[in-house]
Length: 146
Image (cartoon, rainbow, N blue to C red; front, top):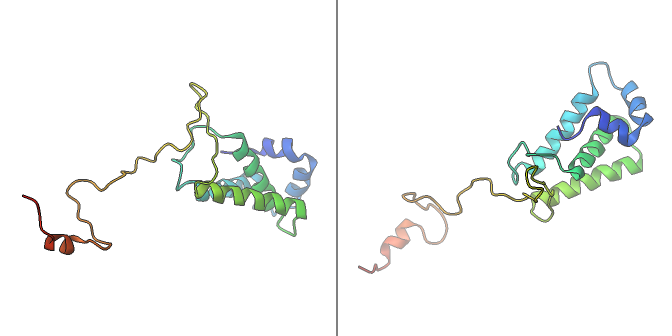
């Protein structure tokens, strides 16, 4: 988890208790936090291998902001809405490789951001290229050096 109920209370205090009291009986803060985590993973999952090895502090803050916004099932304040939109904007920038989460290695305290997701840089040997300007049929017509 990127954030806990305790993190919400530490950041927003009594406001969370007030919002919690207005939740429908079948809802819980844990569900709201899970929704926030799913939303975050939807943005960063294409770039980072999940689960993350550790949670950067900025991601914990964004998870709290998103969960707080979701706790307002009625109209949120302008400040709550703006913090949510800022978090989503940052996550979109992370997904587009224009911002970084600054994930720190627990062993040597170095940044391990942007490690490849084990995707090959080129096509494996023996595969056939199916698209683009020079497909196999075009390449077969070209003279070869033998």
